[in-house]
Length: 323
Image (cartoon, rainbow, N blue to C red; front, side):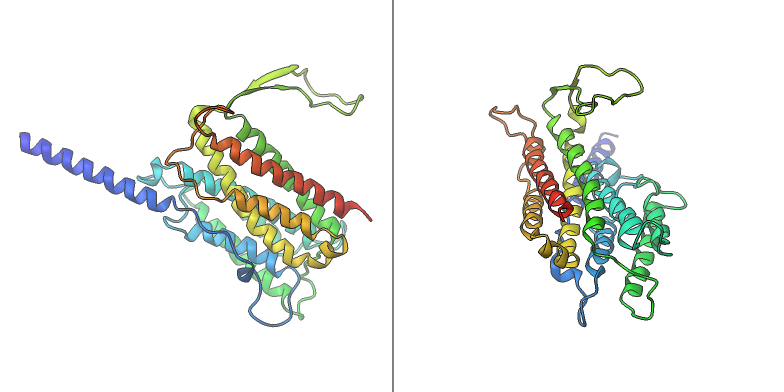
């Protein structure tokens, strides 16, 4: 009887060790895309090819990396993992934003023009709950979205399909950058809340006639739960990874627009700050030290890069808005 218990404990320990090794392997983050992965192999460059390809390859990478899509797994070891699912969700949110802008802005010449036939369906399929594992599963819907995006990419590359277009204009790009600003601003605030801080209410600042539904508090104490600090960190890391892929594509497709506005350097600054968010995390855990304490605070370091990227996005938006 004693030997049986020892065997069971040994098997349990071995199983836990195997789960740990697998979870470490599945937690390896994918590399950012290179410009070479975003352009067609030959022929004249196609406007919109790089941006569409960045969205396609980003989604494919999330689905085909080690372990596949982990956010909707319901069995160990992925059931016990939270860092990579948070990374996936952050990247997915950026992909959803870009898909929506492609549907409403990049593929339409003006507000009265009709939407492309493939992009609305692709964008809708990306909006399924990322934790869905029954029919339809998240992976199946995302792969259907990829197929539709590839159809759109093929049609904008074919002169026999003038109904499919990608318009690289300053106003279109600005619409996407406005969404990027909101995401980066939110990420920066959530990361900074790792140490807790009192925030003053600035909801109605700048407009004396502004009103809100119910009265707000003059100030509030904001602090991220200790259990969620690593999730917020990796969600921001995933969002920055996807955004880096998209910015490198924008640099290709909107090259003439950026050159005319003398805004190439501003975009490169955004890319540089986003690259910094992807540096290797050498610590086995996400530390949450005080601002100037003995222990590092990884969230505040990430918030610094995200805030600098957001400031560069604002500068780029202002440049594009100028005549």
